[in-house]
Length: 466
Image 1 (cartoon, rainbow, N blue to C red):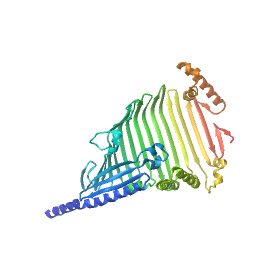
Image 2: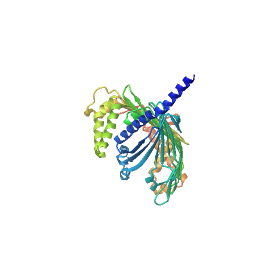
Image 3: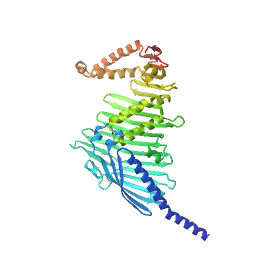
Image 4: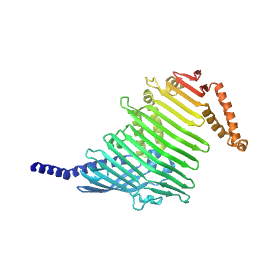
């Protein structure tokens, strides 16, 4: 029995002594991979200044530079072009396992913490003198899954005049990355402005999921993902809102080698002057996008900006690529769908549009792409919209009020007189639309139904010549 305990103790001790070397090698390889991928991306530059390796720990000094004007998403932004290059030093303090005693876990291969002091930004922001602006802790488990925790400290910004101040409550996020599954969630208590413009956004949350591993994410592979942004409330002197949701997601169909993109916007309540709108919703789906096109499009952008080409040259190449790849895009039967909904005290509105390019099986010529009859033969679209008469009157009143905004006679009327005039004019407009067949009246609702299919167009069941 004593011999077995002795053997066990030797094995455990051997693991404790030997594991840090493997963990060190694993950390070094992952760090080099991340740096290589960042340096390959437009606008980023990471340099290792020093790397002190010990058996149980390491200390690495990095220099990070970001040129916003070189990032593809800011290519056409004149503000980004005027901003100086962002530069900062980053210190990585790493502990090697198996014993970590870390906030993300007791055991693991390694735990690496980064602190970005961002001292140059103190010219513009104020925050706790004892705190770095950003902190990140990444812990790799014994099975190579990752745990992530990051923080941005609370900070304030005041403009040069001192008449406007922004206050940021701080940010905290936690995530896990196991195999090809990423989950991450972060939150901000509040973001406020004070002074010339008083406003506040509160209870901000972000959630992210992705079906990819670290290598795939760094390489820019196509993968399924979902990002959700929510805010509990927005208040200001002019506009108030509650329960905002923005969600973007994409899915991959490996069998057909296509992607689909979904976007959804929701707002539970909105109040502006005397207008109250509830349960607003807008969703958009783009389905059956050819992945070959997406890969080529992504590569074109990366190659163009990496080679230092100007925006105009990249845009010309993008237009050429779209023209070249459009036949393949169309053969996958892409779809574009919209849905809209809203409520006001006077009634509800809902609308839905489904559209697709269908039945393209042969190679498409350049001449066909410029022929409107080709598009009519292959375009399928169905629109169904309906609104309570009170909602239709409300929408018409808003439009008419905007048109009459500069009328001296309208401006001299009282609020009751203005409303009476708008209601009267809206009634005339809506009656005319019903009489001409643009709208139908069904069960107290105004309805619009339109369709295009096989070259035939109908409006409310009546054919329309094209």
